[in-house]
Image (cartoon, rainbow, N blue to C red; front, side, top):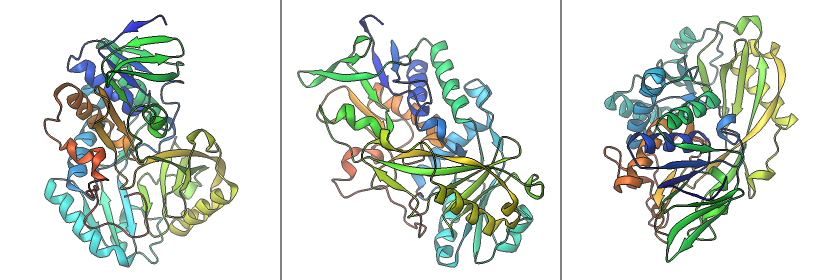
Length: 395
C-alpha cells in the first residue's frame, strides 16, 4: 500500500469495525478505509458465542438490542449475506435469590416491547424436556433469541461496506496514530501512511496500545473466557434452545448440527490479562471438565457427550461491563468504539450506526450515545442495572 488519504479510517476488522465501516459508507461520509492487522474476524469476533438476545437489564441496552435483533432476523434483506442466523429461543435459569430481580427485569423488558416471559421450573421443562431444574426458582424465556455465525457476520458487513465504496485492508498492522496540533492527521501502518483527520479505533482489548500514548488510557481489561465443544448424545440431538444457567455460571447452545458449545461466565471463570496477546488459545483441561460437569447438572444426558476440545477468547471488559463509544477530549478527530465486555456481537448492527452518526453529526439520532461516554467512570455515573443478577460478572 502506498501512501493515501481517507476521510475516515477505522482501526479493527472485527464485527464492530466492519459494521462501523459499512454504516459510515452507507450514510455518505466520503472515503472510508478500514485497516486490520490480521484477517477479518481473526480476533475476539471470530471466537464469539454469537448469541442474539434482547433481555438486558438497562432500558437503553434493551432498546438497542431490540433494533439489533430485528436486523439479525432479517439480515439478508437489511444488509445482505447469509449469517446463518438460527432462531432457537433462549432460556435462563435462576436460583431463588435472583427471583425479585428477574421479575423486575422481565417486566421492564416487556414494557419496552420485548417478547419475554417468566416461567416456573416446571413450565421450563416443557420448553426443554431434558432439563433437570433442581435448585431453580424461576426462569426467563425469550422465544425470539438465537445465534448466528460471527465470521459470516463480520464478512457480510465488510462486503456491504465494499459495495458502498469503502476499502478494507487486512494483514496490515497499524503502528501509530499521528497527531499534530492536537488533532489526528494520519495513520501510520506497516505498509504506508494514510492521511486523515478522523480515526475510529475499534480494536477491542488492543485499543489502548494505539490511543494510550497520544490521548486517554481507557479502562479496558483483556479478560480471558473459556469455551468447550462437544458432540451431543442422541438424547439431546432434538434440543435447540439456548440454556443460560445463572446458578452455575455456564451456558450451552447448539453448534454445527450435533455439536454443542458450552461456556462459562461466573465470577471465578474470567481471568484478567494485561496483554491480550498472552491469553492462551486453548481452554484449560480443568475448565473443560468443569463445563462438562455443569452442563450435565442441568442436562443429565450431557454426561454422555463427546468432548471435542476447548478454546479461549477474550472480552475487552470495562468497569461497568458496557462499551465506551465516544470521541477523545484530548485529540480532535479521534473516536473510540471499544470495551464491549462480551456484548459487541449481538449489538453490532446498531453500534455501527450509532458510531457513524457520532462521527458525522456529533450525536446519535435515537439512542443516548452519551450514556457510553468515557467520562462516566470519572463522573461516578457508570451504566449499571437497577436490578442486577447476583453471582455473575456478565449481565
